[in-house]
Image: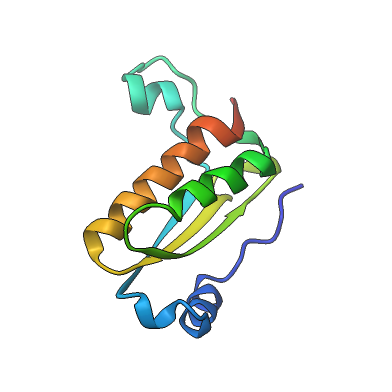
Length: 130
């Protein structure tokens, strides 16, 4: 069973009250969701890949924490918040939310790319269900 997704509006309100807020010129968010198109179809162009009906999703919190700590070392990054779902998810369910606040757009965009990529490649297990 999946967890209740957070409210991005609430997250942004809380971020703007955080002690780092005066240093932040931009917040950028990511909301990953379970899609019907199989990874093999989207990433490798495999037209024979069966549609996805769900996903088994889990993560390693220690690795997530390490990725977040490393992202804080990137230039101009002052605020990070991450939420990951878990369990058996269905198409349309939220997989993850990431919110990053930093000084300027290039720094925040780079940090979001870095952190989401790191989480996806090192911290989670995703098994598509067809």
